[in-house]
Image (cartoon, rainbow, N blue to C red; front, side):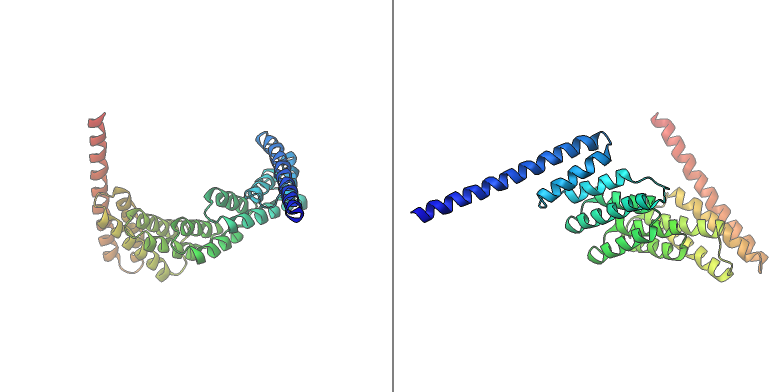
Length: 273
């Protein structure tokens, strides 16, 4: 009986100690939250760190420490101390997302941190690693396509935009965006090789036509299809002026149909109002 009483006393003491630990941790979190809400990130950070030291099991402390480091980071300041804030924010949020990979808000915060710190390649690596476990995550694929475009790597960007059309194959907008990207490339920064330029034009035309096939009144897609036919005319004019004239005629026909659809939309809108 004495042994049982001793065990009960020991257990009670342990539970009491555990309860005190939780209370101390929550007091630190409360102080941290008050500072954070005032945008006093320097004041919030040590309290979050202290709370984690007291009670490492508290689920959100990695995220809160990371957010505080983000708050302390100053974009465009390349000083070593400022870069440490970026390093720590990235480390904390990566650790948190390994435990809670579906927290989109935290993931967006991490990606913004990468971009603000001019670490686009690290953001791409993050999403590539994420896709190994979530290969059908459309938003992640869109993010990679956008990040490669931001990095200036058109070929990789276009490959990922094409992946979007495979994952989102029933959405005409996916093919429309792919076509727009192709047009932007050939109109603003075309490859020197004519064959490569024509390949991009044809891929863009095919994507836009597919979007129109799915949505026959897709005037926005028609507008860019018209523009790509005109880009093709510029290429064909170098070797075959007759073919170039046919390209322009095709572009004109598409443009006229586009204008009819826009006019019909405007008229329908006027009737409603």
